[in-house]
Length: 290
Image 1 (cartoon, rainbow, N blue to C red):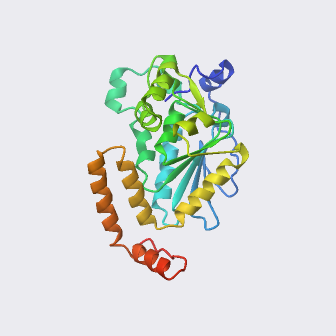
Image 2 (image 1 turned 30 degrees about the horizontal axis):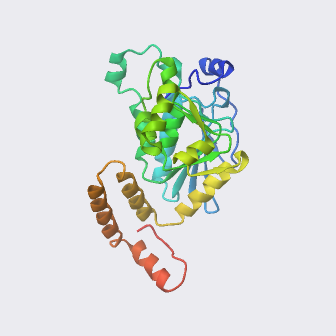
Image 3 (image 1 turned 30 degrees about the vertical axis):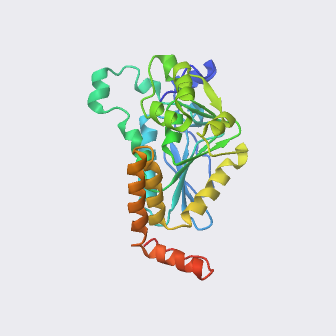
């Protein structure tokens, strides 16, 4: 939730004084807003790419950035050509945390009445698969943002942490809940209570990260994975994502019941017929997302 004292003093100074709009760093053909860059990637332009773009502030998550991110997610969600989304930052930071200036003078009444940070959850409600490509710092809100994604790929120098305790608060965008489910109680408790970070290697060993790549190839590898996902039936992919996510919300018995219902539902789709026919006929399936 925050970019905190866990960073070096020079980094903290950056987080206290935001510069003007940074010059966009291109990911080939792209559209730049004030705080993000978006593009459609992949051989068939079926992958939506969102790059957080506040490099001088280590991609600190101000309200404007979250609003632009939500708009980009909505646009890709509604684009029938896009089958998966990649969310990334820069080489130094995926996102170093939240904008402390935006919250330091808030009262309990302000937070409660405005449902502060509730709009951060939009990412967790996207039906299409989202891959986080994390280089550098993923601290506080940056770590929470990554954990809202379905898959996390990390660069070799990535660092993950929830250092909110160091400025007298706790994670407020899912950090205590998603981190515990990902890495277990003991490590999550240690990270939340001490503010200590873990490396990409430790994150992978703990189950937070799926794969680790060199810094310079990370985004490319995430796009490759997204392309593979996007080549499948979008409607069946959404069912698969819903079923896996249900494992975090339901008992085993409830989860298996939901899985069965979704499995049966695939038999109402044309893509299920095409997929099985293609398998029997030893040819590549041609899904129509129907």
